[in-house]
Image (cartoon, rainbow, N blue to C red; front, side, top):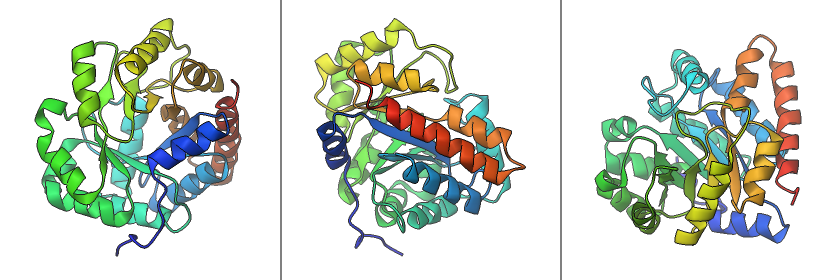
Length: 275
């Protein structure tokens, strides 16, 4: 099944759209199939209905080295519910039936390699994926993936962190398309109480070395965090673990889960407007 006949919004158009309203982009994350296929689809619909400007979808992996306990638990739930890479692409196709906003995949390279690089990117294109970020794929090893991305019109995303030198930042920027994923904190994913001044300084440094839109992730868990990164010059904020925590805490009450996600997402989107 292909969704190439669906008019999918590009990241370029999305960032232009939100900038035109003097906002930043709110990008929520979910692991496909967590806690099960149908519930995760309902969660994505709730994201979209409550202000999501784009989506970041994780494909479950058994050894997610960049992720903390919250995402690890979500991966385990998704794997136990029978989610495979093929099911993940089916999940994207289901999402494309109700929204055209950009969709980025966050995956580990083993999943790409197992399916075959060409086959994975072809599936991504046919399913309506805009961009792919392989969390454990350094730019120096990424040429095959970059070539496949260009072949199928999928944007390849890379991460930059506080430890990234200016020279490497410029190299990454040239290989990257869509946006640069700026890692807000040192360490793995997970909700944080505070984001330090180092995050603001990193956003400013990246902006001085790249013309790509900047999206900040890792540790963004409160409306104040979203407001801070947008006001520091970022174009968008990715919220992951704080949303997955709501799923974890309400596994036995789906209505409560969706209600809490709805309220939380609305607050996060509102924070992108507080300039």
